[in-house]
Length: 282
Length: 280
Image 1 (cartoon, one colour):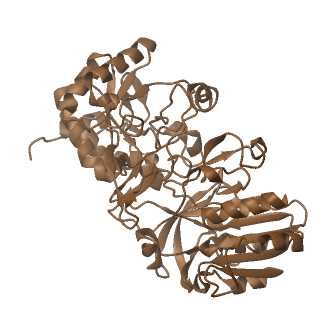
Image 2 (cartoon, rainbow over the protein chains, first blue to last red):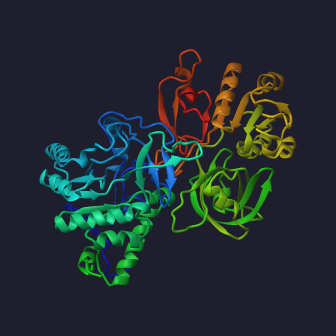
Image 3 (cartoon, chains in turn orange, brown):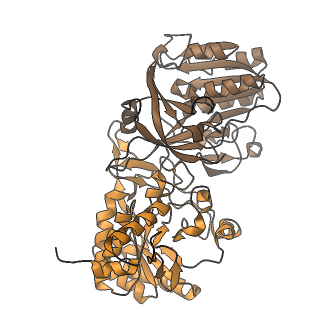
């Protein structure tokens, strides 16, 4: 621990111990990781998406390794909100749910490519409904698979989102050439991992420029402290580690440790100082 | 025992018939590993961000006079196993383990029939060793496409009371599938348990034969996997209550169970084999 260095951040009025969260869909419901990570010591856990009814998910194969990343088509397998509240939430939620992330952008459900977050109107409608239902701060998770991300971001912020999570997986496809068929049973899937990090950093940069003051959680291929710093420098308040946890179950902890070393090396006393240190011109 | 992450030195890499065997110094994993569990191996750390590869544990040397090691067996089928096949002694690999639910040995000494296909036979040697210590009778049935793809028949002969070999092309043992001699062996040995590991269609067929004979059957499945720790939901397969089926056509209503956490060892009667995608 570096003296005079405070790793904690304020995200939508919620104080997080570190700016490094576990990303949705990449940390189960938290309980699975209790043997690997001190859950109370990390920035936060975004659970796997929970739907009203239980979802069985998609058939296998659900995963395909690709250059510097992977494709997945899990299809939001989850036990439904009732079972979640009776089970995993009780294990996790002490002192309670601090933030709600609305997944507007999973590419692996029906009507793929027509997710809420590809349409500013539909995305805003969903966020407004969530806003009416809860006083808890709301993050809207968006996709980069759009021509005008800023327009969608502006629409969900106007509809009441307190912050944004950028980005979800990118819609992709891989082919088994030997067997001449898609590698995923669902044909297409979401691309994640370091392969998408430059796209994610660009998205955070564009939205942070257009909507200054809107808290952003940057996610996409974060596997080291330097990766996290890229997002924070261009305007993210926090980052979420996703696919990195699949390879290194302690990635969420190690990214925060690496970020702390980075801040110390840069002479910063907290993560919130990073955007001011960023030089937009080369 | 809870799993750990270890940086493991390669002790030895050798050829076992058509396959490769890799012995890794892994005191933290070897101490508590049980037959049927697996290790999740990352070959090298490079900029291309490879995913880990799961392998069932073939052999364990418990920590004692030496540090403790685990051995895996694999076939070169893609980039990950190719990288593993090129490791040399003293190279270091990043390993998670022991992971998953192990085989459940019988409470009392009992006859056990161990059925393996191809390199899927690997965990059955570790299991046979444990069963022998528990004074169980162990009979082996191992099969493969050809004689060259049988895994360590000599070792099976040494560990088992009997060994039956089958090959698809008849180049060794009986021509045909491992399920061919199973009914006769179940009757002849009076086995009270069947343990199987190999390709999914083989596990489905072995489960059916065991169920028809009324013998409990545990299978270790091989599913494609990303995390190995229960968080990615890639390695699922449909399982249900074995008693919930309608007249032996499979279990009752199913759910998608993660083979890294609830498996890789499952009750063969709980898996809805008919719902699985056919493997070409």
